[in-house]
Length: 356
Image (cartoon, rainbow, N blue to C red; front, side, top):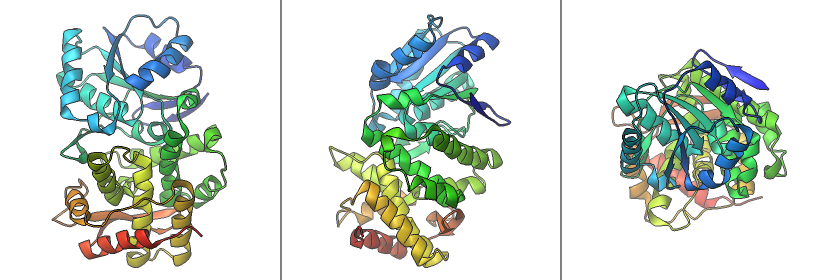
């Protein structure tokens, strides 16, 4: 069993889930609550129960899947369920799910009775390499992602590749965008190894481990996002705005990783223009994401809506829209103020690119 240790918690790579058995044996909780959504309740909870037959006493809190439901109303429903089941300060929440479950479940736990313990068991590739690691919790409001949240550390994170077998390929591809991001911002060799993968349905466990290592190093170096941690936002300023627009205006909306892939192309363009990212690196990033994610139609006429969302981004300071931009593959700068003119120019760059 591989393990990553930090001053806050341990991350276990454990298909047996024995680490959860050990954790529960070494800690005493008055009640255990497992938060799932309808999908993970159907496909992932049986996997967990089959591996932990002695875990029989718990209550299920099930939410409706989808980023559109990561909001205060669903949080209130979780809090009410905890109250109804008489959860006290010694209760434990186990978040079993993707990014929506781990983001919202940990936010609900971190604020209920001023904070109760929680464990992350991420079941999607996206949540394994990103959402469950780092001690950020959050919900959306008015179309702005993760604008309400806390810094709260889980007691432990347990990653099992068996859960990935329950996912459709589109979900795997979405999570893969965050792995590519980790390579672009921190490790060129890792990025290059990811570009050689031909079958995303058989991603090597070691590559997931490396991705988590990169993120864990960044978040433990800067747990409260005062500096280095901001590089994890590469692709997210523009990507989040496009994701929010799609969520509010399209029936078959973009997944998080699909939107961030668009953002990483646009923001690589800004890196080329503003912080010395080479033309070759810009082309490598552009072509890598186009090959995997195809081309999305950023409709003309929505620019004002996209900019409005970006103006509300939590990274901004003094009325400036701040970005994290790569200056080469394997390194990223942060707190780069970008003009709205350049942002619009980056959208036009994306609209004009073609797959070679």
